[in-house]
Each structure stands twice: as structure tokens, then as C-alpha cells.
Image (cartoon, rainbow, N blue to C red):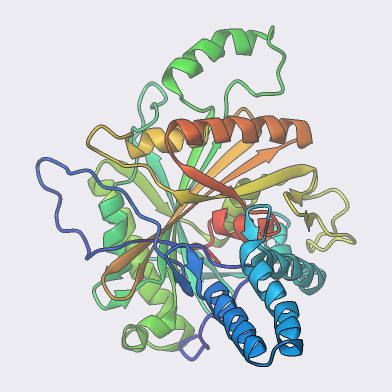
Length: 439
């Protein structure tokens, strides 16, 4: 593990947001407004991509040469310059033509690359994730206290999962109760001599009453007004995924035995540190075992419980694939998913919305389930990068369409920018599963 090559380019393009400034100091008694800003993507100058600027310069150079060689040269120059200019100006569904063709080609490549069957012995609940990324595997080992510890990875990284719950209370807590402090997560990026690649928070929610119930149902009439007032979902599960790349701190791996053993010990050190810090603020935290990790991925994927056994052999193998990616959706069993990337964050504090309230609004759509994912990583030394995604899961196209409209209205009310990941739904799903962050 310590000699693994750098993480290869994953399915789809990575979308990150960076807080352009040094790492924030300890919060003062009066919090100042903060607004995560969208950083310029590599290869761009403000709103103009470098490729487009080069195309315009080439078009100008061709026209200049053609003008010097007129009249025939000018005609040839115009013929060559027009496609260069159009490639930079024309857009399809809000994207420049070269980028649109690139995502369409990547979608076709993923369909071919991921067509291989799932290896025998794969847990049925974890199989949909393996269909998305065939290199994913789960691992299990015992620590010095004989605890069963689970991790997942693809040979270039390891991820540990910690499930977080609010303290037990007589009544179900409303939104904002027991939410994980973001500064606590930020501090996990570097613990002792261990550096993490990213820290991801995934919140899976299911509404109550269930959206498929008729309006005259007793559960709808009884629970509906309460839910509208408190915004308390029927089910809310929170995981923190800690992604560890051994090449970021080879000394820490070697100090703990080297190889896979050293990488596991280093990651477990951070996972235990997270659990201890969460319990210190009055929350419950548990480092998951391998079977728990498979269950968490299955829950986040909204697998159909019948599909985990129906048509499957005892070793988890199946004759057909359970997942499929289309332009706007990703299908798992008989459920449809669509994922959005958060392109613009609102201003928090100083009269802006509270972060827990924002998450509650973005995951309140009347559909089977809503998933919110926030990934924190470090870029260029002390600069932090934030990447947020929202995934909706429905039982059919109509339910998913109504949920998408609800989500877009909620995002507009909170001044959140959302971009549906057309032709990049599978990378979006991987970014919202508890795997460690954007892939």
C-alpha cells in the first residue's frame, strides 16, 4: 500500500470549490460572515477557459496570415478561423461544445469499462458500488483491542467510516441538533504526523410521511403538519468517511509498520480521534466494521432489499447488472437517482442561513431519499477546498421529477447554485456515496 502509485484519474471530471485564503484561525466570540467562494478551475482565466483563448488567438493569427496572402489566403483563413471561434462561443445545454463532447465521450467510455461482472464473493449490498468502480474492495482486520474494523479502497487509498448519531433523547431531535462542527472535521485533515486526502460527511435522509402514501392516509394527516413545522425527516443517518492516501505521509506509514498494516494503523488512529472528539461534544460515534460498511453503502445507494437476494447466488454474483447510467439519471435496481453539484454557496452568518438549516432544506424533497455530501480537502498548502453534492432517489421518473423541482426551488430560496451532472451521473453518485469524497 505504501508503494501504490498516485491515484489515477477517476470516472468523470472533478469539481471542487476552494476557500481562497489561509486556514481560518479559531473562531471569535462574534462570528463574521463567511461565504465559500468558487475557485477558478484549472485552465481558466476568470470566466474564459484557456483553451478558448488559445482558439481565439489561433483564429486571429490565421486571419492575419490569410490577409497577408490575400485574396486566396484570406478565404482559406476565414474557413479555418470560423470553426475555432464557434468552438469557443457555442454552447450546448450550458456547456462549451468541446466540454460537452468530452463528457459525452467519457460517458461512453465508462459504459464499456464498467461492463465487467462483479467478482464472486462481493457483498450484494456493496455490489452496486463495485459496478460503478470495479477496483473497489472492502477489508477487515482486528485492532489491539480485538475490535472488528472495516475499510474500503481501490489499491491506491483506504477509507474508514464513522457513523455519527445525536445523543439519545425522549423525542427525535429536529434539524440542527447534534450536527457535526465543521471546524472539528477540518482539524482531521492532519492528526499528528498523519495527513488525510479528504474528509467527507454524508447525510442520508428519508421523509415522513412517505411520499407514496395518499393524502387521506392517517400517517399523512397526523405527521404531515408536524413535519412541515419542524422539518424533521423520518430517517436521518450521518457518516463521516476518512480517506487516506499513503503517499501523502509515507513516514507515518513506515512508523507504524509499513505496507498495508502501517496504512491501516494510521487511518485507524484518525478514526479513533474523530470518535473521541465527537463523544467529547455529546454525540455518539462508532467506527464501522466491514459488514457495517457494506450496509452503509447499500443504504446510501438505496438498494432494493429484494434485489440483494432475488436472482443472486450465495456468493453475491448475478447474471445481470443492477446499475445503469444514462444522461440524466443513474439506476440501481428499480430506483432512479439524479445528482447535482453545488456550484455556489450562500453567505453563512451575518443574517445568512445556518448551515444545518440549509442541509435540511436541500434534503427535504418528497421522494424516497435525499443524500447530501460535503467533502473537505486541502489544496496548495493551507488552502481548503469544499465540494458539495446533492443526490435525489425516486421510485420512478415522475417522483424524481417532482423531487427535482422541489430541490431547485429550495436551492433558489437559499441562493444556492445547483448544476445537474448530465452525462456525469455516475461520478456524481460516487461523490455522494460514503467512499471518502469526490472521485
